[in-house]
Amino acid sequence: MSSLLVRNIRTLVSAENTPRHIVRGAEMASLPVVNDAWLLAENGRIAAFGTMDNCPERADTVLDATGRFVLPAWCDSHTHIVFAATREEEFVDRIRGLSYEEIARRGGGILNSARKMQEATEDELLAGARARLYEVISTGTGAIEIKSGYGLTFGSEMKMLRVIRKLKEESPIPVKATFLGAHAVPLEYRERRNDYISLIINEMLPAVAGEGLADYCDVFCDKGFFTPDETDRILKAASVYGLKAKIHANELGITGGVQVGIANHALSVDHLEYTGDEEIEALLNSSTIPALLPNCAFFLGIPYPNARGMIDAGLPVALASDFNPGSAPSGNMQFVISLACIRMKMLPEEAVNAATVNGARAMELENEAGSVAVGKLANLMISRPMSSLAVLPYHFGSQMAETVIVNGKVFENELSGPTIKTTD
Ligand code: NIG
Ligand code: FE
Image (cartoon, rainbow, N blue to C red; front, top):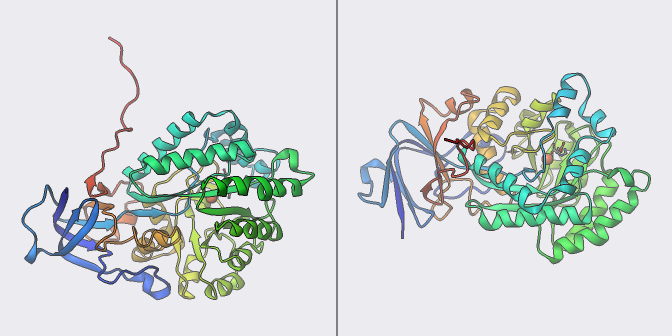
């Protein structure tokens, strides 16, 4: 039995006696806290917490958190961290004036990543994704979802999902896997897109489900990608295998993606840069969570999602990184929080709730992660000394999580550090 005690915590954030599984509307602006607190982890899980007047005396490891905040680790419910190559040429093309959609139409974008994926070996993909996973853990991520979708052939999609399965097995934090065969229509199917959809439904889905390679099914339902009808067919086919929907919607226009996600009981509809009153109304009458990905709006220069409208209407909002090589090449959740506050006018408390408890719910990990509650995984961040919680989003670009705890132990990224070899 190993134990960790964190003492003299200025503020223990999201400390729950009665766990909140989701936080919506006006509730998003409040966070349960304990000031002048301690927290005890045993065998990787949160065992107890309280105020310093009744602090336990001993533990195997004791950390002093004077002046610091302790928060639950980020729950990043939307990423694409398995990819074969970066796409900085497209980044430069966009600086020169091309749009994301123009690049996609001429065979770049997702199709560019899919070409590179064909040639990559499982070992190469695993090494790259593992390095990204460890990097995001060291910035405070304590649970993550990872999608396929750069394969777009039977073999390559299965290859990606096998890499995600290996990550799941070896990862120190919980990983959820999502099958995204419907990320783009491959060029050779442009004139016969129905054949690609049949391939997904009749060949990929049965194999993915048969090998238990995914928890969820995603579709990029948007202008120039998959229509709501096509999305509906794919999600219905996935549900036969027990794969719940978690989709990309309304990134490039008001396309009906939100509604088709809701009709298929999607756990979350993600992106939502284009959202009108009808989408908000439809979400209010559902249990589907809007998951917002401000890194993408930042990087592509598209409008930010209307988080304020959603929260003010009473919705629960989740925040995720969308870490991918095309539209969001960063998995830094603290930067996501900063963007949410600075550009989407979310309050720091709302942003923290969105990136922890609601993020956990958006990948069905609400009993394991997302808050400080007895029995949950001891995946936590200890901040630098801070005068208030708002300092976290305020210092955008600075690493405010000074120490990251994973499974009750201080996390050391053994994959970081210089890789340059010296010869003497
Ligand atoms: O979530 N929008 C669709 N998929 C990814 C981007 C994929 C890419 O450009 O590689 C996203 O933004
Ligand atoms: Fe995405």
